[in-house]
Length: 376
Image (cartoon, rainbow, N blue to C red; front, side, top):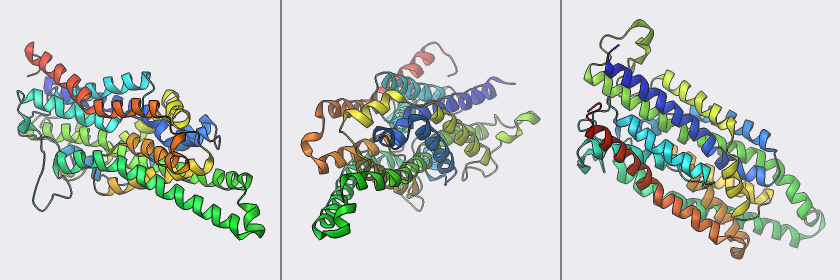
């Protein structure tokens, strides 16, 4: 087995480690609110998230295709080398740092930052290694960093906040009108009944959130593995594969993500999700704003809708950003003074730092390996 093939297998293993960590790091994003409102126990919520993450991961591959062919120039970066390992290491290290600190940072942006940092370092600091924008007939599929990462990075948190405000305001207006109507409508609009109704509804919104998380986050690692395999195929690494590794040949060329990649990433992420992420649950579910079932329902529905729309267009947006800002929006609609801005400030700093921090770690690892002539 030659060195290039060993590196490819190492990329796949490292990508799956990232997927597993992504699962337990981002579990909190889909279950924090349903745990905070005491609708489900932590164990029940984790199992719900694991199952719905798994189902969502099988729902299309648009995001995976963006990662695989729309962010870095594969003619500049030799993806069959250690570049992808360094990219993944940058994302993994930053994820573990923020998980340890209990900060809900974005695994998506950690991965993208690591990928960009490693690509720039491998290309001797040539930013031409990054595909900022693509024109032409396939722009909707992989339109580059500007349209698929930078713009959604700004708009998706804003959309999450505004949709959270809107849904919460509509629900409050509905309850108020029921109160005003009198009779049995006024009786069922009392807090006890509202909590009971939305306690049931929140199980559905939590499942929707887990599904949406799977449609977006699980696909990012699929894209990394596909990117490594496409590069290995182009470089001839897969030419004389042993029989037991024949599945590595991309059956759909560079257009489709192979089924084995989808299945493996889906299962690994579900396993990681089942491990839980209790430190981040505490920040999202308790520290930003006090939540009731109706608030959790509004936040989860808002965030899951943003993620589902983004996944449809192949945009690798942040689950963390969308649910955090949706919770902020719900809290703002409820009572602007109920928000704990000191906690929000810490979260925003983690958002701002994620791409440059993960990118910087990956860049440093590539430069270090190049300095010692390892794999380059």
